[in-house]
Image (tube, rainbow, N blue to C red; front, side):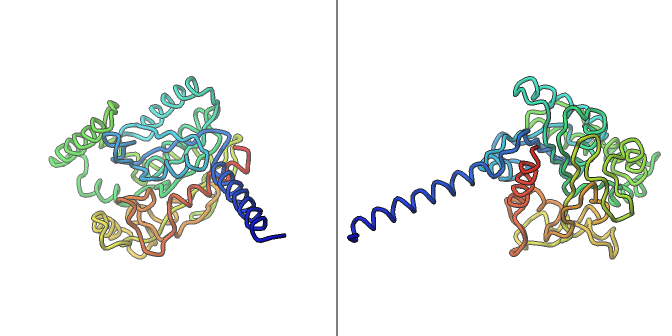
Length: 310
């Protein structure tokens, strides 16, 4: 065999291998049911259509073949209210896409929001993945409630400011749902979370820092989170995470949510090198130099769901 023929055969082989690799890459996250990303407190889907809450994550999932939708619910409100808004949007997606179920991924307050939907409308949900979610309450919410108790003259003033900011975020992202900062505060408190979990216990850990049932009513439950706080000197949100971490004492946390509080269903991992905003690739994708890519971690989760036929 002369060099020219060998060279052509080698080129064809390499081309075939690249084609196979590209095909595998394009279907890596191709789940049976669409993925719906649900933002947390003071969140949004996309500001002016150019800056996403789930920074770069949706595109990464789509690149692997997933159908991805980003929910838009109140930036601040009771968990149940946000959950009903999500049900409204999922019913609309069901009508538009013809898909009967969805794989829900909720960050922070988006976690309990997705859990509510799975509890009251299991027909809409194939899986729930909660990311950095305060499932047993957020100490910061308790601290705020203690600092601004009912009857405090500052309480309605602060609530009005948060409502106005939430409404501003809603306007920038095209969302007109009502805002209720005090409702969000009540839902995210330890007492509010305890009451919520009693009403919607599916996937609840059997021990204080353990795992819960992997499957309830045919719905798979997963959780993952980070336990780093100050992760990148260039990230302007890191000081906020550092301040938030002070209420935890020696408990491992991501700046806003404790490690054990993040547990629900099957705990995939609870010690990524992320703070609370790193978990959704904020700010601008800045995170710890050697930390895992949130987009890659959620790609792997989508592939896990695909393998399970979800």
